[in-house]
Each structure stands twice: as structure tokens, then as C-alpha cells.
Image (cartoon, rainbow, N blue to C red):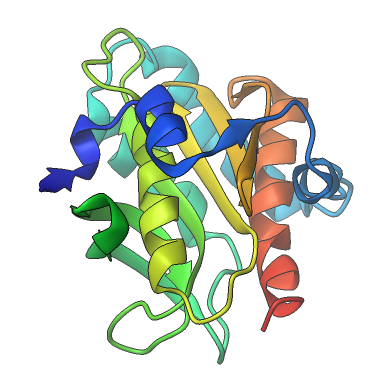
Length: 212
């Protein structure tokens, strides 16, 4: 049986793959504690500009508009590309689970991974941008199944880091072995929470290097 990412809900991922949600994981706790005090004045001015767009439009933008006018500009300012890994967008990931007679497949919105032309060992996923007023599927479920698929193919079984976005709210997720944890919402229309989002994205290369 083949099942696409967009059809999964988080409870189904838990049941199928034996995952358990916990309130705390050390990897997520440490990630949430990323220092926020090194945002330059230039960056603050840029963040203020795109934040104003979000405040005015968060409840009106569709998914493409949210991605184009807020998420993509924000990501463009993050130091996420190195000699060892880089971001990829709209890449297909699939994985087979013979013991379950199951194959899963789907496109990832944004992933940081090793590789030059194709993602080879994903470490961080930014998957599922949802507009604020409408959710026809489960963004956490889709993020989790994409992480499970990547883990099946990865050479090294390291913790995987991810995030999904619903309008102004960002939720950070860590999957470590059979356990996963989800942060509280970070509201990008509030300055201190936007700085936390920036800090967590900026820290990602440092975290990835620990597992190389």
C-alpha cells in the first residue's frame, strides 16, 4: 500500500510506527533555549517590516501568500547553508516499510540536508504552511510522517528537528527514536516570540554539526 504524506494524521503516525508524544525532550528544550540577544539592528528593522505584513494579513493570506510574503523572506535571512548541508525546497521523499507492507511518499516544503543536487540526510524540516482560518488536514501528522520517512532512509539515526506553521503560529518539533515533543505556539506577531523563532532557525546549523 502507498500512502501520501498529506493523508496522515498524527494519531495514525503514532499507532503505525509506535511513536509516543512526551511533554519534554532534552533536544527540544535546548533548542528552545537558543540565545535571542544577538539580533542586529539591521535584522530588527527587517523583521519589523515583514512582521507588520503578517499582523495586517495573517487572517487573510492563503498558504502561498503566507509562504511568499513572510516565511520565504524570513528564511532568506537565516544562515542555513554551509559546505556540509544546505536547504532544499519542494523535494519528494519516499520510504518503504516492508514489515508493514507500506510505502509513504510526499513533497517536503523545506528541508536542510546533506547533498548538492538531492537531499541525502535530512536534519531539519519546515513542512506545512497553513493559513490561519482553514485547515483541511493535520499539519503535525504530515510533518511527523515526513520525518519518519526520512529517518527510514537516513544513514545515521540522529534526532530530527522540524517546524510547522499555522498563520502567525510556529510549532517546533523534535523526533528522537520513538519519542517526539512539540513546543507551544510561537506567535510571530509578538516581538519576543519572533526573536525566538529567529534564534531557533539561526541555531540550526550549530545543532546539525553536532551530528555530522
